[in-house]
Amino acid sequence: MAGKDNIQVYNPAAFTARFMPSRALQALLKGDFNKFLIVRVEEMYRHVTRAVPATRATIHICLYLTEGEATMKIGSEQYTIHRHEMLVVPAGQVFSFGEKDVNKGYICFFHGDMLVGKYGKLSLLKEFEFLQVWGNPRLQLDNQTARFVLHLFKRLHQEYTEHALQHVNVLQPYLITLLCEVNRVYIPAVVQEQTAAVTLANKFRALLFANVCTLHRVSDYAAALHVSPNHLNKSVKAATQKSPTKWIDEAIVLEAKVLLSQSPLSVSEVALAVGLDDASYFARLFRKHTGTTPTAFRKRIEKS
Image (tube, rainbow, N blue to C red; front, side, top):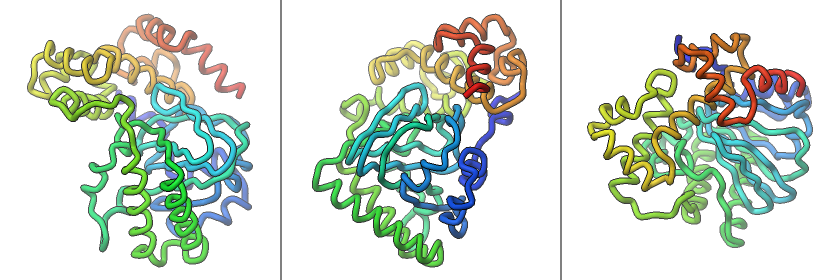
């Protein structure tokens, strides 16, 4: 049983329908908003009826604040941003957030296809590390960049509000320019030169993200990357300050959280879905990384 087949992956239409069931909000979403949409944060967030449990989206999400603060858990880390800061959730990454933040700004959802066309190409995605699962999702902008970015968000919002996706050749260059602007001030979570160890660690994390429910041994990833387990251990630890084993365990727990909150599977079935035959071991691993049992975690989600 493959875990990701059981995890609810939301496109914007399904996501807003479940967690923000409001006709007023739906009226703001125009055209094919599974490809692109942008709204003011305050116009969307006031319709959030409850905390959003661990889930994942089919497209990239960019949240930019002009006032207040926002807290979101992305992957295994929690981030809080304030004015002139941005959070990015790469497509497919696990995220969750509460319902009590007070803020203003813009939130933009876009599919990778929005970078392909007259003014762009899909390879652009590789140039923006913050759109990769191993990137730093929190971007702090200096005053000048913040002014540029705010202008671009306003222009995207105006075009989308007035014309939806009728003029993609207008939306696309503004979106690409926005991403290029924030990329100039982007700082990796761990500042370092692009060494062979960093390159290998990034390849490992991308491979882990795609195979977390089927590959659990460091040796499996080493073989897939054509290096020795010892070399992979040293490289990943040097580049990320965490061992491959810890990365694997944390990824398994993240997958389990999504299943526990979004599927009707029993705890034993969740264990199998993330590739663990031993339900007892799964429970110990889950508690080690979360401080609670899978059953208690699910009950807490159900009460929220």
